[in-house]
Image (cartoon, rainbow, N blue to C red; front, side):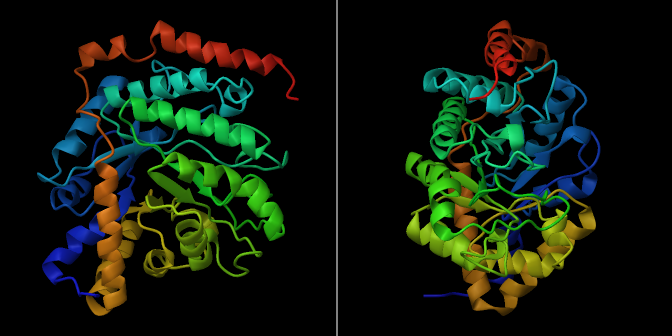
Amino acid sequence: MMMLVTTNELRPLCGQLFSLGFEGTTAPAGLLARVAAGEVGAVMLFGPNVRAPGQVAALVARLRGAAPAGVPLVVSVDQEGGRVQRLKAPLTVWPPMQLVGREPDAHRIETLGRYVGEELAALGIGWNLAPVLDVHTNPENPVIGDRAFACTPEGVAAGAIAFWRGLRRAGVAGCGKHFPGHGDTHLDSHFDLPVVAHAEARLRAMELAPFAGAVDAGFEALMTAHVVYPAWDAERPATLSHRIATQLLRDELGFAGLLVSDDLQMKAVADRYGAGDLVVESLMSGVDHFLIRGPETRQLEAFEALVRAAESQALVAERVRQAAGRVAAFKQTISVGLPMPSALLPSVLGTPAHKAMAGHFAKWADTPQS
């Protein structure tokens, strides 16, 4: 039975559906106040937030320490390897996953994933927005390319699932992306709205297959693509498509975890929808949690619009409750403690064993891909 959420419940419930970014190397007072009110589910770190390991550890401790008892804050980062890793030296600099995927050794890839997770855990970061589950089938793709583990769905699934299992061994959650597949786009969704116009049979065999494998493996979170797939939905990108986010992912593939949007400030969606409409429509399509790097005005606009919609519409309120429940369950999968003292960080970050592992896979850069 649907129940309206009371006004006192709404703001913290809606807040748990957001991951927010910010500018600078210290946490803004406004963000800390919203975290303290329980109105932020997670905070994302990007390159401009990072100066040195001790600074990151202090920042994470400040953010997580601001959260109320019983409503933990999760800190996330994109630490894929290659050109998408926000934390660099003196942490280990990991090679692109295309090189990692060239060696079909699941145990070694899992160990690499564990090493990545151990370095994040040392800094108190419990959520890695990785691995990529896209299949690299388009050499002209401007955004995926060497971020993908392989050019075949089998290779992608094997490498990405092993990497994710390694993260889990370190207590870190992963997030497979970008559902249902961003590997064959000609446009970068940061700047425009791509279309993947393949027939459904091809999409299922190539793009969808690694995600089906990830669901079967037990991935706790997946991220949507701001991409249109006319074979499934001719008008709306996956982030806004009930056909894709609910009927395909939930009903058909059986995914029961947390469905996360890609960043909602990316031009593929931000140039076409207001912040409020974007969040409410995505929620009703099946997305549970929304990434908004910034600016703060857009973050607040989206949040307040969701609160208003939930106050006035029982169906929206019910989806807020459902999504907040998934966020809470997702947080229970993370077992990362507070950041280590700065003096101890060098014993975990950029260790000889980690660097040797990175070097082992980096050697494939000199070998042509078959």
